[in-house]
Amino acid sequence: MQITAIEPLANKSEQVNLFVDGHHLLTVSALVVERLGLAVGQELSAEQLTRLQREAALQQALDRALNYLSFRPRSRQEVHQYLRRRGTAPDLIEAVLARLTELKLVDDRAFATFWVESRERFHPEGAQALRSELRARGVAPEIAAEVVSQERDEERALRAGRKKVQALLRGKAAKNYDAFRNQLGAFLLRRGFSYETAKRVVRQLWHESRAGAADADPADEPME
Image (cartoon, rainbow, N blue to C red; front, side, top):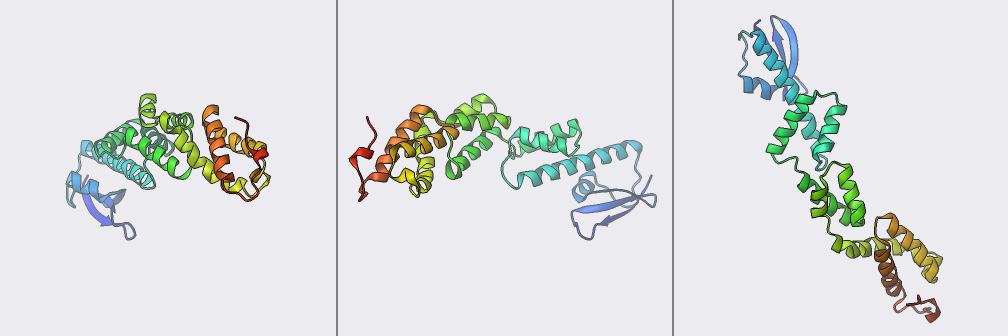
């Protein structure tokens, strides 16, 4: 078998069509052609052809994984499941994950840190909920426990609660402590905060919302 042509794709400069004995063999990444030192006129043995096909499949899987990672960091399990859904062979998945780990593009501790920071910024949740989300994405329990600090739960709850209070103050909960407590407390519990944390935060945010209010009524204050 002889390579008779290597032609770049018009719309994908990183891909080339490889022809053997005048017939199209496969479309492959130019990186594979370069890595294997392929050239027009070169004879290919059956062994070399097998290696070429594997390298082409491996590069395709790696390119898919890199594209998947371009949107946001992913856990090792997320990348594994994505490639499996795309029909990638198990041995190729492991090879891709090994390469991505070597390049530090897949790192469950770094992913967990990203996930927690993102949640704290846009969607604050309790430590229990955060750890559950990380475990669902394949992060080891010890890494999840290390990254998620239980001590910061009240800070996270206050951040989540203050966002919710803006909506509550437009309704009847603005002047009624029971309505305020029930709605904000339920919201915080759904976010994975403990009952005690939710209770403390509800009281603090109620006092903040009523401080200086012209229509503040002592009867509205919660019993200590």
